[in-house]
Image 1 (cartoon, rainbow, N blue to C red):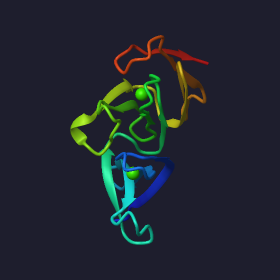
Image 2 (image 1 turned 120 degrees about the vertical axis):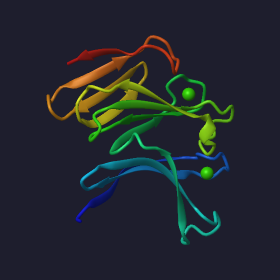
Image 3 (image 1 turned 90 degrees about the vertical axis):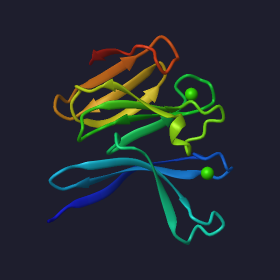
Length: 158
Ligand SMILES: [Ca+2]
Ligand SMILES: [Ca+2]
């Protein structure tokens, strides 16, 4: 059976707070069923970046586009994931007091929109998130007045 597996966007952030930036990326495996993952990678031996690397899966809800940005201004970034295949906008955040992403029990996912169409990109400039969508060639803005992970996001089309 044929399949396509690819990585897409890459950002850099110290996910385990060890003082070294890690690679954060999303990957998709397209066959009869599309499987997607948001992962962060670091060398197995942090002193040997030319050796093997390990991938740590953060979520199954990110396929192509994401941004790492501090939405609420607390110094700890969140991850906004706009999905092309699943057509959904998610917000991932960690409630670890030091902002660690290597402890799954501290990572939470919130669905902002599950009915927006295939995303071509997402940009964040608080208090806005902006999604570029495939099907309508329109842009969908999400706006929140509160800097909170649980606040309501208002949608508007332009
Ligand atoms: Ca690190
Ligand atoms: Ca934050």
